[in-house]
Amino acid sequence: MLDYDLEAEHYDETRGGLPRAVAAADAVRRLVSGGTLLDIACGTGLVTRELAGRGLRVLGVDASAGMARIAAGRVDVVLGDARTLPVRDGSVDAVTTIWLLHLLDDARPVIAEAARVLRPGGVFVTTVDKGAAHGTGGRREPSDRAGLVVEEAARHGLRPSGETRFVGHGQGCSGPDPVFRLMAFTLD
Image 1 (cartoon, rainbow, N blue to C red):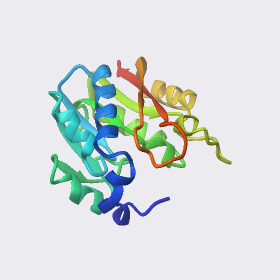
Image 2 (image 1 turned 90 degrees about the vertical axis):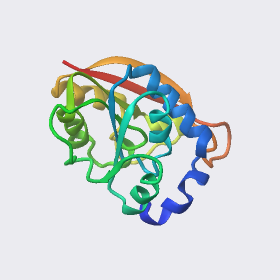
Image 3 (image 1 turned 45 degrees about the vertical axis):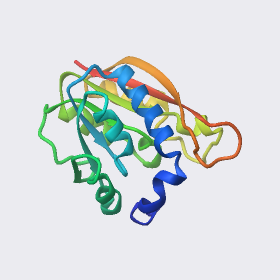
Image 4 (image 1 turned 120 degrees about the vertical axis):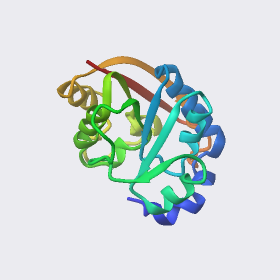
């Protein structure tokens, strides 16, 4: 896995920058009606800032001090672990994990935390099947495979409530820009 503290300074320019952030934020906004949004693994805060510009009250959380330092210049952010969020139970209207679950060996604790901090009726939005977007496979079953995410979300009272896709501009890979899949889940 990358050392995100070291990657922070160049992350945006090597990952599609503003066009990618705008595409991701527009896609999230199609699935989230409003209110307070917690962006888990917010990275440099570029997507989070775009979400704030679309009428949401946002808070970012990231485990990397380097990423959080850059994000702090864009949005409110706290340093924290996605598996033990520094946020009260039932305190936010929406939670996002964009480009996070595929990095984890086990996404279950993050999905559980998203459900914990959501208000009833709140929405969890996450990217799924990232490897499929890039046309890559791995040796292990991806932790962001849609079926696994749906199954784990259901264990925490989250039901599928929508889906959309967006182009991941300038991902630094050869060939066409990947198309990412976002799934939304509503807390019962």
